Amino acid sequence: MKKITITIDVEQDCPPFLNTMHGIEKGLPRLMELFMNTEIKTTFFTTGEVATLYPRLIEEIVENEHELGCHGYAHERFDRLNKQQARNAIFKAKKLLENFDSTVTSFRAPNLKFPHEYIEILQENDFKIDSSIAKYKPPFPLKTRIVGDIVRIPASVTSSFLRLPLSVILPILEHMHDPVLFVHPWEYVDMSQTAIRPDCKFNTGEKALENLAGLITYFKEKGYTFLTISEMAEYNR
Ligand SMILES: [Zn+2]
Image (cartoon, rainbow, N blue to C red):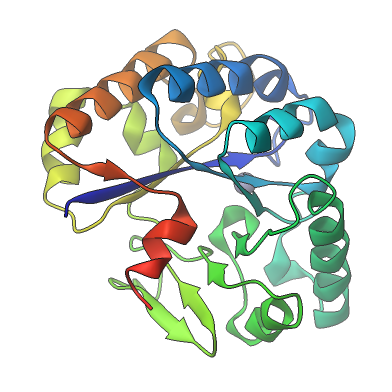
């Protein structure tokens, strides 16, 4: 079976450059509508902070049967926290998210930076999946690994890659085994006039949404099954 997973990192706009929430207010509803229209399920890695500020939107994610995952509390960089600070942030975020969904078992660290020795914190908090690693970042994990009872699933490509022309990205993704993609709600709002890195703002807004819709249509036509990250992990246990 050909499989693909789309995940969404639900956070403030383009951290650490901005602290606005246009993505949550405008981009997230656009994504929800796209996933509803295409009838696919995804995983929303959400910060505790967004869940506190926008509870109704998080309820909608769960009502639409998407998976709710954890993306830290305030999008903190875990490689800059000591173990106790990391433990506090993860515990607080997980508790908050479990007000919306009693089974939050998937985690992704902001910036895909999570010290290996902090995996035990995920185990303490009953997480089963960690997607804080990427195939394109050191140590370049090409495959899913199991550490204790945690399945570590690497992201396949960086999010800005998905805003390149479909003629460029689709053949590359098609050659990947079980691609795991991630996007952010703020990419679906026009960020071209904001003071952020060029790679963060090109083709944001309508163009990004068209691209993602085109990608979904393409892989559906090719017979791929769209899985949440938990479902994808089941194939790797
Ligand atoms: Zn993030």
